[in-house]
Length: 185
Length: 154
Image (tube, rainbow over all chains, first blue to last red; front, side, top):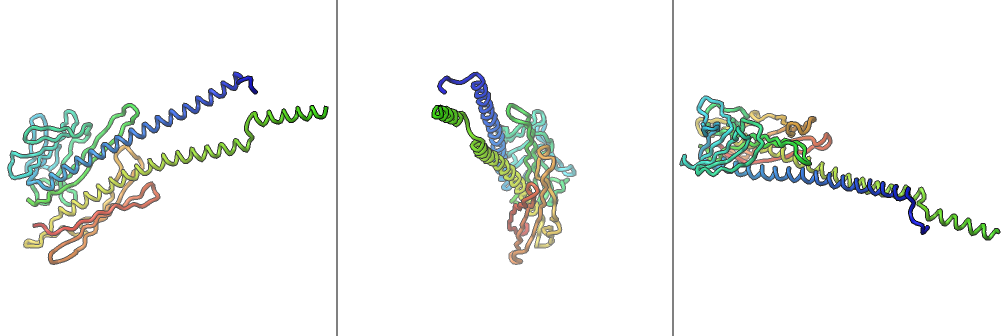
């Protein structure tokens, strides 16, 4: 009993120990992956809620707004007779047209940004995949063709694609909401 | 001789006892280990299921909120010329998808149901109630409800 272990005993014990350690490491990696996945989801959800709350509040309380397109030449508002959907939304909090907030998707680098009259630009998100982000609709979801319609619903639709990276698989996110002005124009 | 034989047999029996575990012991140990592992795995499954359910509930809430905003935007003028689009026939049941493209091929669909009720005529007030009804993993019905009260357009 006191002569020690034989070589086969040590080999078998080592093999069992290695299996155990492998299992523990695999469980740890799985837990880490799940944690990372949940952390990303929660971060995206939190960001989405903050951004939508801010955007919703601004639309609720604004004096007027306009949907348009944004490109290298800047913002171009849609005219009467044009389908009211585009990649940019300009919000005027008051009757003063020099004060505004603008939300837009930069199609060159697929980023979603917010800027104001002072030129303060904040990147809110990247990896945006859709080009039509904002639309003005009626109560039944039909896209309007005239600007400044009373009772218009501003529909916001943002879709994101996160590419695969270390310990993370590719994933999609979508942010969609409809908001109306509380102040009837 | 008998005594020595007896001692040898006893020594042999003791050594065998110390050499390993009996089948019953191994089976009990395996059962305990199995129950422990099953508990850990069921914990993981429960967490994942809860996360998916919460995500779908949030999507359902968003869909209900969208319908509520649409109903709030419906034109309703009680003064001349009277217009009233805030009626139930303008908001029929609608089936929407709660899943994102690529995340679930099976998909989870939800039915948006809108109820509009007159609360009072003077002052004119209506209640808008929106239910988003969906089936979680084919077994549990879940309803996200949201309600508001509105007056006619000014």
